[in-house]
Image (tube, rainbow, N blue to C red; front, top):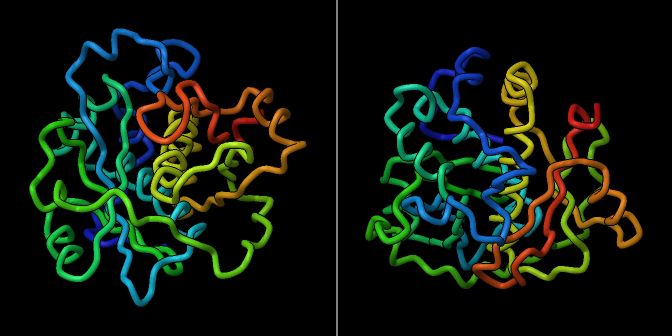
Length: 256
């Protein structure tokens, strides 16, 4: 995993000073029931995937790269304390947590890459994450990009995940486009990040945010959702029914 626009790594103390995280079991920003979060100004986290016609990324790599991009942004010094992106991130986290994935190629990608943000690269995927913007205030070079067209495929089935790495398990019964699944993987990574201690966050960051995204076996999904691990329940804005359980974040630190 590589990133562009590198910044000095945040210290453990800096990580612990990030914006307060919502309590996952109360006033959860991913729950579909209406809460006070709906009354706050709404922001969205833009992610842009590079999808060139001749060489589209593999689906699983795109999902993993999007999840890492969210973590890279959350741990960036610009999102902490008085950083230049901190206010936007706080406003975004105070409302519904929305992420939207768009695709770009060629000149579109070059224009997107010129805007403030961070590009994270996987094996075949490149995803650029940007500081949150108002729901109706996208920069024009991002607003014109297409949401559709991210129906990516894996050239071969992904290998089993590293037992030592966190795994974001997709619900085997919920079908999602690659773009939707990228956003959901980002949600799960964010929930895991919020649930970790400052020390565990720093260790994950310093290791380069290793993680895997895989689809759970149908007979294992129920056990995953009842294990007390971070669980994304989609608000139902696109593609899936409100309240659908989409991803479980299985980080060994969170299993106690």
